[in-house]
Image (cartoon, rainbow, N blue to C red; front, side, top):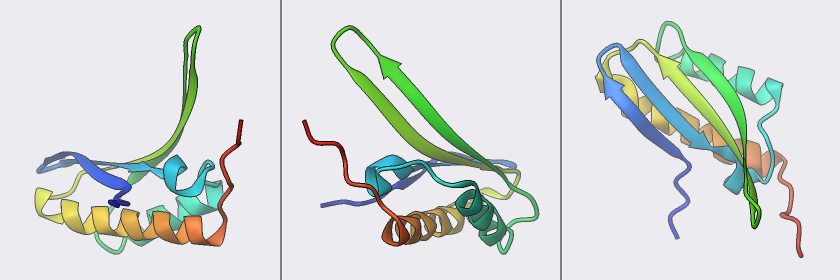
Length: 106
């Protein structure tokens, strides 16, 4: 089973964007402290970074989903994209190991 949670969505020089699907791994949102920890770890590879914690609600008459993602943006060389993705992947796994919630059963 593939447990990859971090994906490079955009990678060109000066515009790297990484999406971390945080919810499926942890069953919850990332905390502010966890987002700060990720940003500081990424600074070991890049000079500056923007990290967004996003909660998206998709609702219809027959379904409702809530998606918890963390999005990383940086103006770094494309050659750093995979290293940044690896940092995000390890961070998400650590966060889930430290504190996870079981999904609601129906």
